[in-house]
Image (cartoon, protein in one colour):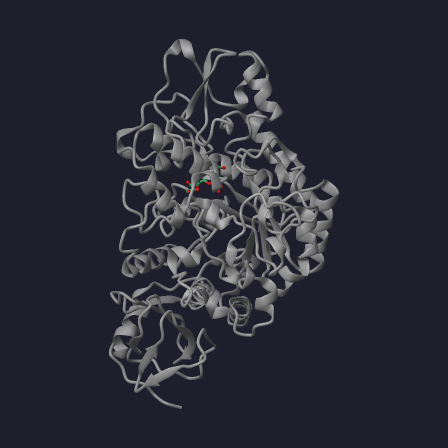
Length: 588
Ligand code: ISL
């Protein structure tokens, strides 16, 4: 076995590891181990996974028919985007009945069969809790808007118009970016942080909280294993609706995430619901910062288990321009800084998550890798390696295991997403550059991550026998499950291998993370674990060949545990990496 000599002296590495305080997140401290820390979560957007009845929309029976595929991935938990009754203004994030199943998706019997099928295969099921807002077609809202004295009036936030126009609140999806909507029935404005069809629920009302907690218990009694909580940091509001306090400096999102009773309500939810079941909870951490993160997830606060932050996915956009990528692409040094910083946030307490794609994001390979034909596969595999070797629970988005990439629609008519469509309208109304907006959406638009899953090379990628609700990426003829199952070096088989790697090496879950060579603009390298049990991860984030020196003090003890190329070239401690090469290897 070769020994390698080193560009960073060994005492430096020793110093770096001693500089970090001892951490409870380690392999030997089993008291701190939890199933949800060790899990790999696979997110399914049900609308796009598999259609069983030819209406062009994915459904629960479709998922049931593919349970063996899901099992074959080796993942532990499935998170399903909302499956509840909804008029689909925002594809299920506008719920009209929290205890009903969306009719396009099937019935409660289908749901029960799906849950049973998952549990029989040892897979846990996490649903989406969308409780900051409901649909405007929810019975509560219909009642609420009908009169000022209706018993449901204070299930929502109303501002009587005789008091004048309420202080500005910014809306994510409104064509005027205005979160107050005037309703003539009762001469009042209602609040909607998202679209007009998604009025915000009034959590300051204990009756509303009880309804939500009862509903959560209803699903837990059915046997689900957790909730992902949509914009949960936004639930509490200062109902005097003052002008935006100066300290927020125009940042509505951070203001929204710091409501006065937020943590009282999360504690109440924990007491009334979560603590009664062996389940996991994960907040969509919109507006959460490294300073506030611990308030959500520290064990001794008895609130939630995990959250996911937005620092990573929002990185690399031009400041002040809606989701517009920097012309030269993102800078790896800054990317490493973000993920290293978030690792350190949870080094002692709490627990992190990691993701590069989801239903609100473009495809990870297009945004963070390189989807040019010669690099799509290798860079997908490289990103998969990153997600599965960090100290955080990986949330892996369906289709990324195939290396699916952005469809890059040319025209607004191809889009379905309310965010893209309403933002386009807003830009048009303001007379701004719609062409530049559409160009940016090719990289950042949410529909890129929502195109139908690619099962095989038959019509519509085997997703539906009807007309798909959103166009299928034309590359389905080669990028699909059938082709990739048959190819031992496919993205799909690489993903399965990477999942097993994490399962077989607990240090990839709990082991200490140390960033190496932080200013390297092309290589992201880090070690996991310490002492005699260490793993080195080397990721070439560039399309160039790069020689990288193994730091002094580290010596390779085996051949790579995983490698997205067939070759592994080292020469006296210098590893020659191919474009987007990823190597995970044991070191001493
Ligand atoms: O999608 C985003 C960025 O494009 C975010 O701003 C997103 O709107 C925000 O993170 C909230 O997302 C969640 O709630 C929305 C829904 O549209 C998203 O799909 C959901 O993940 C409203 O329910």
